[in-house]
Amino acid sequence: METENAIQINVDALCVLKFAPNSELVMVDYEPILRPLDNDFEQLKSQFSLEYKDAKSILSYVKNHYRLKILLEKYNYCSKLSDSYQGLYSDIAAIEAKYPSNFLNQTTKEELKKKEKETLLNDLQERLQAYYLELAYKSCEQKRLQKSILAYSHRKVGWGTPKYELNPNFSIELKTNFGYGYVSYFYTRIRYKKLDIIPFSDWILYERAQFFEIISYSAKHQLKNESWLEALEYSRDACNLSLTDEIAFVRKYVIEECERMVSGLEEFLIGEKFKFLNWEKISTDVHKEGHNLIEFRGEKISGALDFIEKILQFDSITEISEFVKRIEICNKKVQPMLTKEIVLIKQELIELNKILKVLKPIYEDLEKRNSDYENLKSKLRDKMVADKEFTLFNFNYEELEKRFKEQNPEYEKFYLEYKEKKKQYQALTAQILSLETTMANIERYNNTITTYFEAKTLQTVE
Image (cartoon, rainbow, N blue to C red; front, side, top):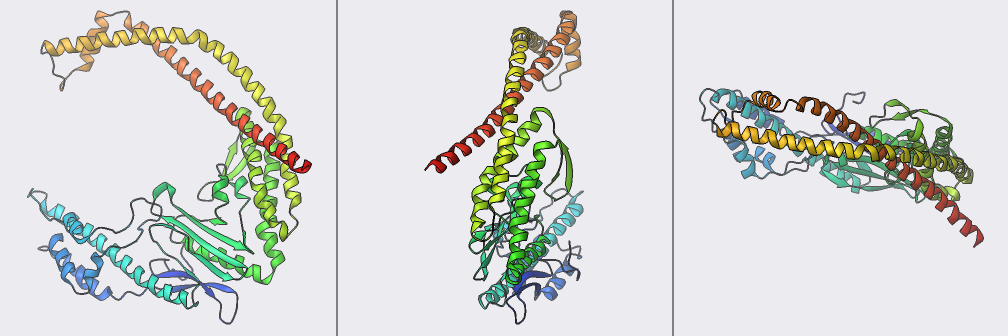
């Protein structure tokens, strides 16, 4: 996503949050990224078109240039926010070692020389952008200290949670962990009157949501530079609404979030077909049935109990107890389903284990016989090598199979039986393991519900 002005965030400009003129409201704007080395870099680029120049000599030119040599410094810079092993941390010696321009094969010399120069040019262009960003960060940090800027975008590697107080009742945290592959994240967290704003609806919007993750953010964003606009606009809209209409703010960020979550739980109780968002926030259809449906209901509905404490924190600013009651009702309704399913799975496991008891000794006997045949085949191969028919590095395995079957004519019929029984055994043990896992999960969800209501009863008595 680009802005209407086709500004590329963290390339052409930093996306910033700041106060609107003569107002306590905030706005999103852009701070242009200055490019003081562009003329020098254009002169440098002309050297890449010279055939007699190789990467090593061009790099030497950069190293000794009184302005461009700064490009060979180390930079905290993510080329791609979602990738791993990011950052420009090599020292000059390591950079030089990457471009030796030592081409021994004359046939491929020109092609390799060209590729090495292309790699160096891309490397230097990336370093140029990293340098410009460092200048922009310093400028924005100075303005932040002067309060003319409240927050700004970046593409730095690693974990950071800068916190910004926008007014006495409202603060934001821009939580980023860029450049660490699958553990990378980009969150916005807002606090209102010292209360964390939590997207409770994410529990039902995402199939594989995690409680500990949801309570750590107010909004999550895709790992793209363009997402900074979404993050800062989200912060702007929330902050301004809290200032202009507190009732509407609480309704949008608290009441409606609770309502979406609880309504979703109520639908889970009766439905089998659901819509979930993926990480790109694209809706996907999911159909669940049988044990998996009950396991899913147990996970989502019992898991919602963990959110009750977080929901009750808003009791000081709005009426919230009705949502807690509805979550408790959902749990009371799902618990008999869980109990019944545990009984069904136990019965199913008893029958499957009876089949396994018969199949297992048959399979183990066939497995032993197959191992014996494999030993015979190995000995035949060793004999063929010893007789100098073949070598281990130039062996004809088709001939081995042919000769082995000639010597053991019963093997082919045996192997078909072995393969079929192995397939049956593996499918049966996998089915049993899957059912045992599902039952353990359902039992855990059932225990969670029981523990919650027992603890609540004790609190009532006290």
